[in-house]
Image 1 (cartoon, rainbow, N blue to C red):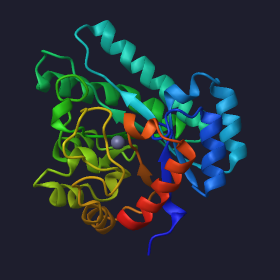
Image 2 (image 1 turned 90 degrees about the vertical axis):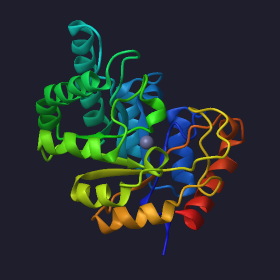
Image 3 (image 1 turned 45 degrees about the horizontal axis):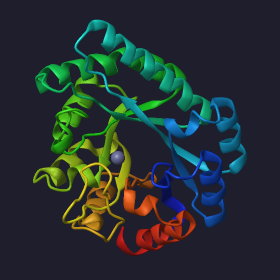
Image 4 (image 1 turned 120 degrees about the vertical axis):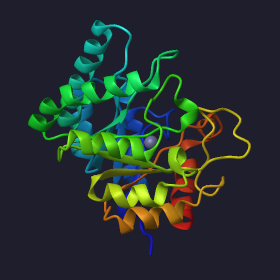
Length: 270
Ligand code: ZN
């Protein structure tokens, strides 16, 4: 049976709220865990954010997001590595055991080149992550984002990378929005096994009116979320189940009422 013990909400899901407002509302609503987006830390500062999270009693599931490693110039790639090291420091400061990597892609450049940059970038950040006790989760993105957001578009590619890097500090993130269409998904989830570091849920609306900001609440779309949850459970995943929804429509609603609808959808549709 479902209960709320593993429910985590991303601060981007309730984007109109400041980090303080999100922390207060989640705690009040009985949501035990939070994934923090870096843009919600910036306005209040890292120290204050870390303090507020510590005092809230919420479990910090992960920090979103690192990545964006590919760049045309060497300097650009170094800038990305430096920024990911800062993200590791931020994750450690707020008590997040994991950073989710949206790996990046450069429009017009070959995806194979991007994947080399991604692998090199993660390898460069890895010692710092290990020293800080922060894991790195490679999140494959739906192929519709292959032009500019990620050259990693299937769980197979993410698994290949994690196996190449062969570190207990690198694994994969399974997001139903990005992976639900993949005929190899069941097999690749089984292959990932304990390398699955996090699990993101939302839904795929038909029609999708905006490819970035029209994700559905669970049950509003066509993804068989329960089936994918069974697969990750069978693979050994026992972590939080993270509700990550980018939606102009839902961001325009009363966020307190929306959070209650998220809880209902989580109980009935995940
Ligand atoms: Zn995600």
